[in-house]
Amino acid sequence: MSRRSRRHESVNVRGDLVGPQEAEQLGVADDRRTALATMVLGALMVVIGAVVLVQAGRLDNGDDLVGAATAPWVVGALMFLVGVLLAIRGRRDMGVWEVSAHTTAQDWKRMGVLLGVLLGFAVVVPWLGYVVSATLLFGCTAVVLGAPHRLRSFATGFCVAALVFLAFDAAIGISLPAGPWGF
Image 1 (tube, helix red, strand yellow):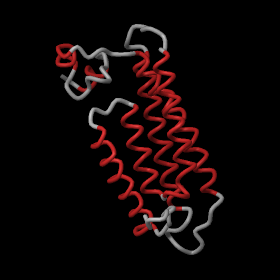
Image 2 (tube, rainbow, N blue to C red; image 1 turned 60 degrees about the vertical axis):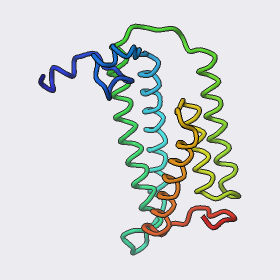
Image 3 (cartoon, rainbow, N blue to C red; image 1 turned 135 degrees about the horizontal axis):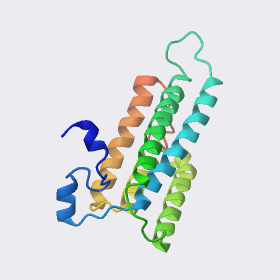
Image 4 (tube, helix red, strand yellow; image 1 turned 90 degrees about the vertical axis):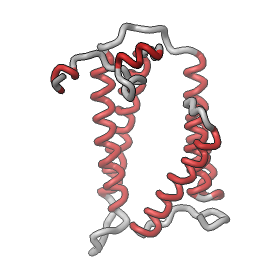
C-alpha cells in the first residue's frame, strides 16, 4: 500500500502500534477527544515554545559558542516544532472520527490533578532538587494518565530526570537545582 493511500485511511490513535485491523480485534476504540487533546496540547506547546524563544533572544552567550542562551534556543525550537506537528496531526484526526460523548467529570479531575502535579513540581524543585522533583513529576503524570506499572513509571522518571540533569550539568554547563542530596 502506498504512503499516499495510507494517509486517507482512518487513523487509530490508540491502535497505531498494532494497526487498524488488530486494533479492531482488540476492541480499541477511537476517540475524538484524543484528537482534540492532541491539537490543544500542540497549540499550547507552540505558545510556550514561542515564549521560550523570545526569552532566549534576550540572553547572551558572549563570545562562547555554547552558553546560557543555547539550551533555551534548543528547547524552545523543539517545543515549537513538536507543537506544530501535534497541532497538525490533531487537526487532521479531528475529521476522522464520529462525535463521541462530551468530556466527563473524570477527565476534568484528571486535568486538575495534572495541573496540581505541575504546580507542585514548580514549588518543590528549589528544595528537593531537579532530579527528585522531576522523578515525582514524571511518575505522577504517568500514573494519572493510566500507566499500568507504578514503580516502573517512577523508575523511568528517575532515569529521564537523571539523564537530563547530567546533560545540562556536564554537557552544557548549566546547573539545575541540586537540592539537599546534591542532585
